[in-house]
Length: 347
Figure 1 (cartoon, rainbow, N blue to C red):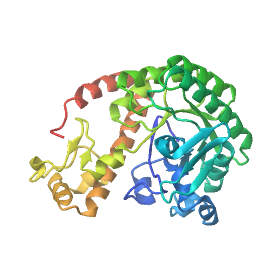
Figure 2: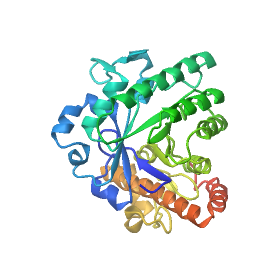
Figure 3: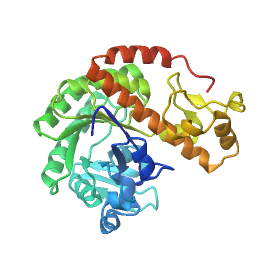
Figure 4: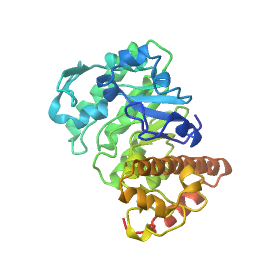
């Protein structure tokens, strides 16, 4: 995988509305699947019996990263209990009692057949006090050591930096994880309700203590300005649901900002979403047609919008890589941010 890179999110072994042929055609190198959701349905044993995630998805030729389920457990605060052994929670699907431990999460991901696995971590709320965040980050570090000892296969295993909204704890967490010598490092617990300035400060604190020769993965962040800001700080990998979620609601990414194709001003627009975009949607379909599809809730609308947003973001990262190679990254960053702030129209 060439980095910096954006990884489309395929929570349940599918990037919503896209086939594996679509993903390959738009230049995706790696997709993200969700350990928590796949464990509940259809179960890692079934996936393993089907030949692993790559075959189960219809022969995905690229890489697959599986997250640990830590964020999903965080979002189920009213349904879970955390202790030193791991986390016990009620499944959102049927209420069944489930247990994740650092060891079991590695085993699940190995059965799924992922290429890059994440350790089980505790994702703290952004309002957590220093004392609470300190205990949480220390537990995440202990869990990471157990996860590393549990690994049996050849998949790559990444640790995850935590520490809440406390810079000193994030630096300490990064140092402790770096000492465990993981293949790469996730930066978790950001984009969970904090403001942009805090996010950037915590990101900077997180990367300062990580080894420069290992990939850094900012988890769950994917807005274009945030991608540029994180790349400037040395981040290599990104995933986010923004691209597919916005697409399902008619939100389309452009160099001038997000446009909402549901807006009536696009009803008679014969042009593409964005001039010079090389995605399959812009090559053939007009904004007027997309407007028509969304207004009538035609399923094709979601597919065409998703193709655009995913390809747009992947191409954006291709441009970023080219700018880094040519030494023009800061120029690209400055010009993009200045243009992107002039939104393409009313949301």
